Length: 121
Image 1 (spheres, rainbow, N blue to C red):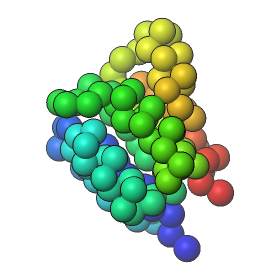
Image 2: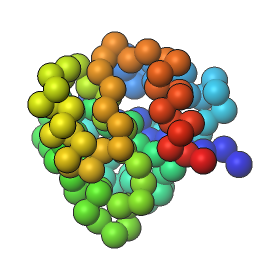
Image 3: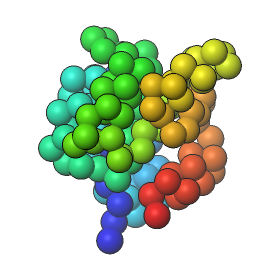
């Protein structure tokens, strides 16, 4: 069975990079370009994992991660934050919102795939 991953990023380039990387590894990929779309698609599609950008128009990735981790319908879905915000305080805050992992851009494919493999068993 192919695992389904939701890629949330307002950058078309970043969405393509992540979707392409994951699809080549056999994952089914769906994408969202903002927080509202991310919440809607997570509820509707029930992906095995969400890759979440932080800086987006509308709701930030932190707000969306918090909403998903508190919603009984989506709280079991692991969220991995992928962001350019590299401060330790940002990382701690992201994990406090309910993210399982916190990766900083530029994303290293091997690190990302290893984190995903550990979360979608």
